[in-house]
Length: 169
Image (cartoon, rainbow, N blue to C red):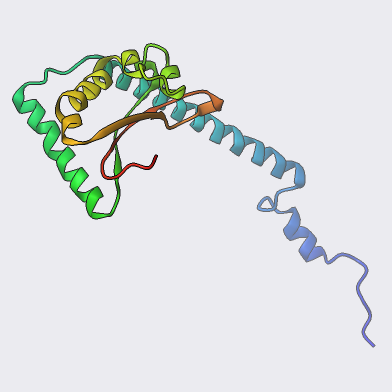
């Protein structure tokens, strides 16, 4: 019959004491440092994202000059996207997304289904609404707006959706 060793193998003990093996305390310290590094990266990323959002708001706050050439530059890709969506069997397409701060009421009228929600729009979203009203409505397109993001439970970005085909009542 074979006897079991009760004394620890010194070779194994020496390997475990080697600097490549972390004690529980070392491992906890390492994990804390890693979490702090990830949080720091996350904060840096959030700072960059907030700056990009502020730049976007600034750009979208300023209306663009809708010359016939510029209007053609806008309508050509839109027609292509609408055609592709229709080929996929879809009856709606999100055509614009923008931060809710481009609404005078931060999107409250849109969220509440107020029929006067277009009056809350500013900048390029207002221009997009007017483009629909003046160019696409008579062609049978419907436009709806909705809050599409809820950061922290509060209204965030707004989406504009062009709809066509039969509508459900």
